[in-house]
Image (cartoon, rainbow, N blue to C red; front, side, top):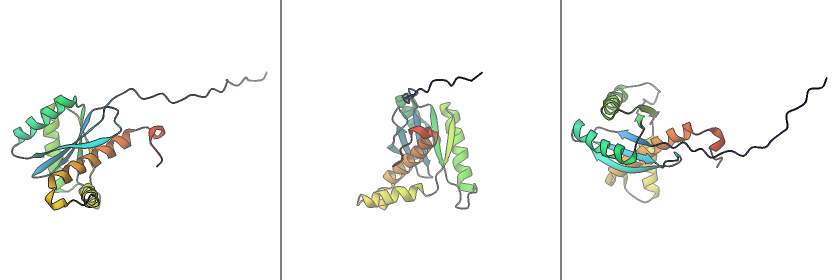
Length: 163
């Protein structure tokens, strides 16, 4: 008895209806670069730079953004050492991010942020802008790079572009 083959059907990918709202954070001692994404989770963009004053003031500013954007997750750049280990700066960022996540009642995910500030500075130079005169913009762009990296890692392979 011959087995019948199931009919071959061609399916077209359905659009992903799940939306995501995430904030990307580039945490530094003086500033926090903040980025957000569109609801589709495709594109990250710098939103603002928070000049750090106190933990409570940092939280108040982040809470406003979280509420406005209905944020579901915080994506924090983790400054690994160049050899891939977690050094003192990374531990400081982890400790801060954990406190922020608890204060805002949000999960925190980490992305390797090595060289993101350098990439952001290169982008500014390409725009003929001085990184040293636009430190807040560097932080925002670095946060956008961090968030975009996270978004790209989450996207199914079939939805990633090849160019």
